[in-house]
Length: 157
Image 1 (cartoon, helix red, strand yellow):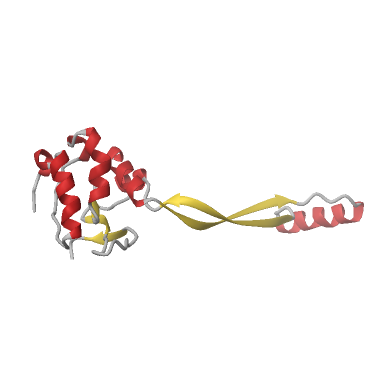
Image 2 (cartoon, helix red, strand yellow):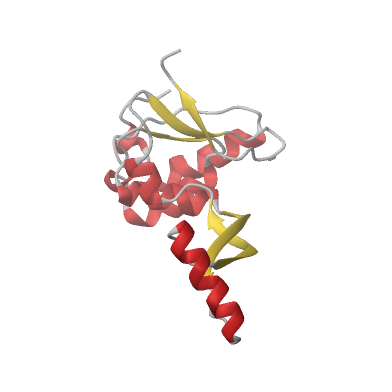
């Protein structure tokens, strides 16, 4: 376990971390910010570690690295829109006008669109601004390499 592991993250140590997983061992690296690690090591470092934790207050820059590492998922979105009905027939127009006079609302129709959209599991903006104090977003990986989706966890209790 290394607190403030900025100076310890080198090309050799990243290779060593990759080897630890094959031996069913691990290491905990605490970094104030990933920006302190040399740029060429960012990608290999995120690839080498199995478990990742983004604490409350992470920068959007670091959050974007976590978002890239956690990938995307397909979610179902539902868009509901209301449209005013315009009648072509005089009698229907008269009924619509009467209904509007009585209720104060125009005659509308509602349309619902449901579609599948690919979204980030946690966006950089959500990580930087939506993680409450005392919480973190954590993803775990088993020794066999199975990934669990990132979850919001309360570190206070």
